[in-house]
Image (cartoon, rainbow, N blue to C red; front, side, top):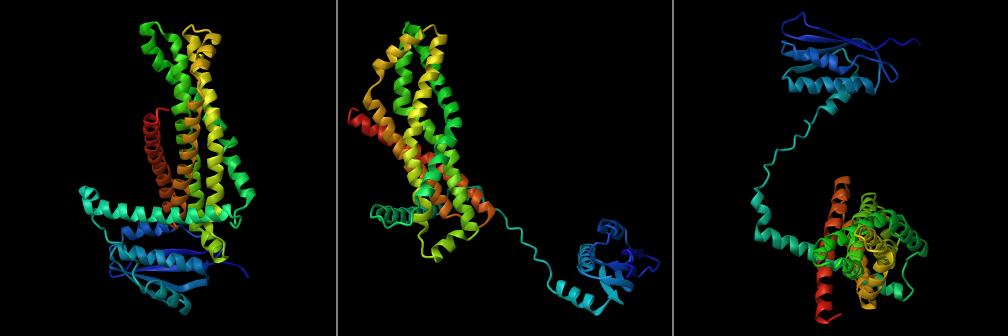
Length: 376
């Protein structure tokens, strides 16, 4: 059966109404004139009514209905009455259903004043909400870790091994870059002051102690917070949006044991190793700067070895374990408690990074104060 190409003509001979004459077969696979053509003609229309005439219409399907709905909506915007004649009964019925309820127009809610965000009541409510959420997460995590210690947790070793690879070897490149640069920065900062006293050799002490106690663990943790912590939040948030976490719970498996525990253990295990790697590269970066200052490599190594103390290394490793635990908790909590939309997943990833960095700074200060009191 031959098909006639779909088309339309806008007849404006009558001053009181314009006629939209439909012709041809409006079916899938046929190419018809773009609606923008009719839209431009309707903008110049002076008649108060548009009559759609289907007397020359052939076969039709959803293509015609989409075109008619666009025409109807455009007439509503231009305050033009929309009527039909000689259209098939099915078209009229579908059009009545599609136009029975006006489209929802969201009310333009006025944005609250900026100072509302600083109101004490709102701050207290947000603090209470986040505190309750954090306590519930930590309680469930503690139960999951206790079941893991008893050997009854639904935690797979294959998942733990995969997350170890993601948090460890996959992060070597960015850890290498940042660690070398941080070591060079420490050496430059120390050199500016030490050169005034002719004590450039003590740059080695500054770099070694600074990397072992502070900068190695802290910079590795900040990188992992932006890299792995955000990834955990995005992964779990996407699973929340896809209702995968609900499906896991329906099967009687704890999401904490199956999803959170392997991620947390992987980051806690890999953080000390990454910190040792960052310490080594940071010292190398400081040695490069020291070489540029005229300090021989053997002199730098000898002075650095005298400053190297086991207590400095242990403090840095303790920090790395605590930092890894905090990053995993912040990322997994944001992902598990995420909403189900794409915007909520992005917000969860952002919240994970910000929360983890705040945790790191507070924990770092607390550990330094404790070490100071214990004279470590």
